[in-house]
Image (cartoon, rainbow, N blue to C red; front, top):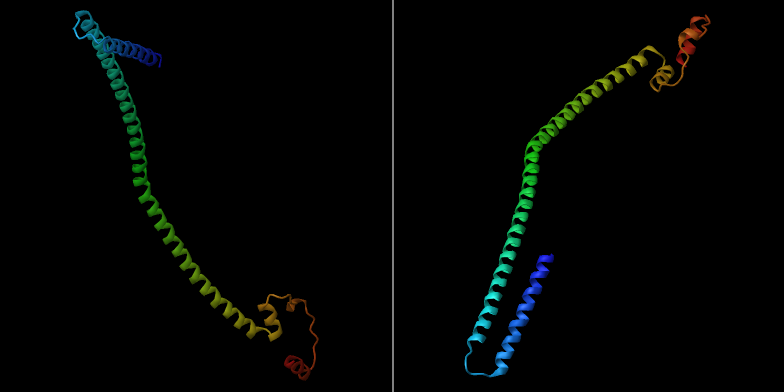
Length: 171
């Protein structure tokens, strides 16, 4: 930055000197050309042209450096983008494959659960039917509803006449 400020101050001083010299020439209104005036004017112009050439080369160098830096940044961004794109291309089919396998596995598990639950319902109906055939209705109902009931091993049997047994069993 100091070089730029130094250059701009030199350019400003040369511009001031050349403008001042131009004013002097205009105010002088001397129609006769002077070799000294012409050589001084030529020196100012060549010095001004040299300074403009240097400023132009400095600006061109700075533009080149900024362009190179922007190109490197763009290369870095492009490299990152390509890397992410390649990873997406590699992972996306794997993700789709795993998703399809997972869905098909869930479908197989669901269908096997449906078949098993169908068999369990058939088994439950058969158990209910067998319970109703083996036990009296009230005990079979308690077994089906999973209520507490007293098994036969804990019940005392009294021997009654056959008529009484039929009477109690009908109830």
